[in-house]
Image (cartoon, rainbow, N blue to C red):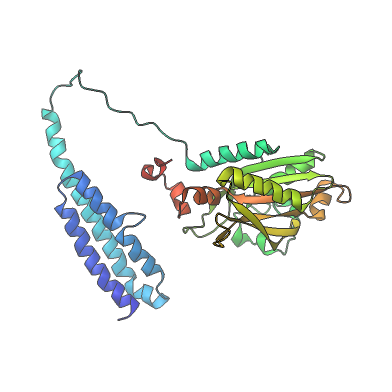
Length: 337
């Protein structure tokens, strides 16, 4: 049996079982349990069928597409029907409800929590503040000079492709990196410079477990006389151990970024003996062309820059396996923090 045929057969079974479960529910709790089992966003059976559907070749998608949508609509209709059915007895009972009892205990007010990304950002500011870095900020709508040209990214570079950026008009776009802030700071301030910039950046990525079209970056910049890669590794090691624990180690792998030379990928490991290294960002020594763009003398000054993903750090720390959970506003997820 082909993958498409098997999926069609499984859709029939899923539809029959889901509708039956919704019809059997006699309380709101039972209905919610059935909803999570069959159409839950994270581990529901329909979510698994969606993943199989997306993996089909084009011919298979055309074969299953209509039936897939029909199944979705019928299951949703059955769920809404069950909700309406369970709400009816409660609505009829309200007019006959007893008078308000002023002696009854008050309802417990649930305290809200700070979003996990906000918690992570606040702690990052604190950790790097203790390492001597001050916080800098910049606009999220940028021009091409600050987002590309001053960062040594020429017009023909693929990073400037309109399909890889959110352009507002021919000259302005939503920033694709927080590196724009380092340019704005260096344009206004002579060395030494020691800053971090944290904020939202935007790239037209397809949403999946590890990608989102809007996410957060932390950018670090240190410029002074005689700055070396040894300083960069020391700062990142001290940060990693302060934020993730004393057992964390870091390593550098050679890489390439237009605005740093040499460039490195930064990996962190929680168990060096096990060899489990996780990439957390990029870094390197600031390219001399970047210094020339802001009026710094590359013969007199050197510096390093690094960029780390805030979501990636938060996910590693808390064992979160899907970046989309940060932006769905599901209180069941947010209450865990």
